[in-house]
Length: 121
Image 1 (tube, helix red, strand yellow):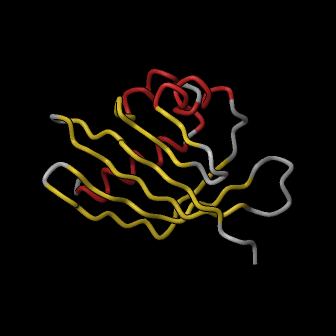
Image 2 (spheres, helix red, strand yellow):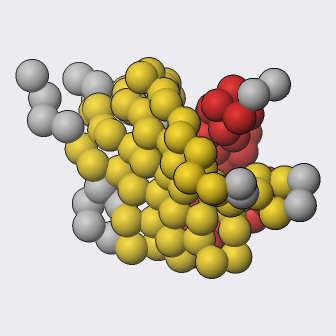
Image 3 (cartoon, one colour):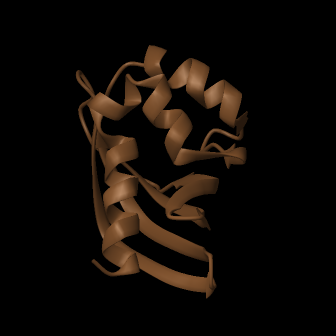
């Protein structure tokens, strides 16, 4: 499996309901120095995501226009469009997402993530 496919699988895993309810799995996928700039302007650390994500209502998300760019031997940037439809929500919420992944030995972990809402058309 190439790097792009590997990182797409990890991004999809982080969007899945199973992972979002599993603090241990979230903790394995996020680096200790992880930081997220949320689409609403909030800033999240790994500890906050591990604690809060399992408590949030689940919304089905899909990925399109996924791209991965290797920045160094052990670091990669991924970008994609995320499409969300929450229960009771009339129209989808779309966002641009970017993540930086770092390889630690045999494992990849996310060190940075940012989401930016796209205006509805």
